Length: 379
Ligand code: GDP
Ligand code: MN
Image (tube, rainbow, N blue to C red; front, top):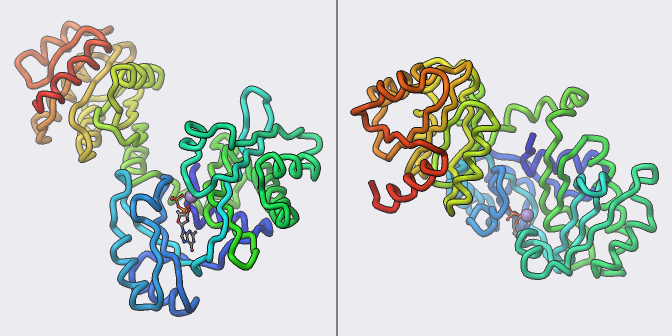
């Protein structure tokens, strides 16, 4: 379960980390009122589950209630990487002198939580890993000892953190570790961890992901669940028994069975394209569900083509075909849709689709190739 920045900061704050005293607004009026209360310059930040909000124009400064209202009205409702901004966080603006990166995350290889630090903060850590990998320090923490002083100190030296601030920074890192363990985090990240002009250490951003398998032992996190869906579509899908994950690309993917859908995503990626989503219609899907799945994928404005990959087992290929035809009747399908139908009742399914706008293919590889050609043609 991904948390919004303001929720992550709430957890960090409860653990004693230095977070700015901000408040959340869902209207420009509320943002203005918060700015008024805080006084001085404020930073207004889009609350969506993606990084790079700053670059996308979702983090802006404002002074006074009027400007805050104005800025908030521009950020609220904004589309950031396909996600609609419903809320903004309003905080006192920071006078940033240094930006560091800090995170705790589980590491498969060492089977431990790893402390990851970099003195290059405020930018995408993937970019740092790509261009200057030597600037990222990783220390696997012994679970029996935890974030011991010596381990944290060594990591800070290696990362080149300002030695005059080691004490405060170390406290933050130990607190971060405590949150990661207490809340079963798959990721607890601060980017940037800021040192201000007057030498204060401040948690300027928070990215927290809670391990879904551990949620049962965190009733205190239940309140975050309502907003944990990446967007309305995820929630919408879950209500209909569909598993949808927004991925941001152009090729819509629908299949039955998580493994089959993931394989399809791999083949799409291997063909040099980006998938728009993961959508599993589940085993034994009814025609109605297929139609809804198609509608859901097509409602993503980034989708330029769709791949159906169905392996008939419990799900009958002819029933899926009926759902697709039903979709074609009720939805306005303006993008190419390729279909691979195999397994139970595949002949019947293919026969049903004959003469329709759905384009039959024999394999998932052919599906990826065909959809690429069709998208390129602007079909
Ligand atoms: P992200 O782009 O989604 O990771 O959002 P961040 O919260 O990290 O903000 C992006 C950038 O905004 C930061 O790296 C800062 O460099 C910059 N920024 C400028 N002024 C402020 C401020 O007062 N507070 C915060 N949090 N960030 C600021
Ligand atoms: Mn950030």
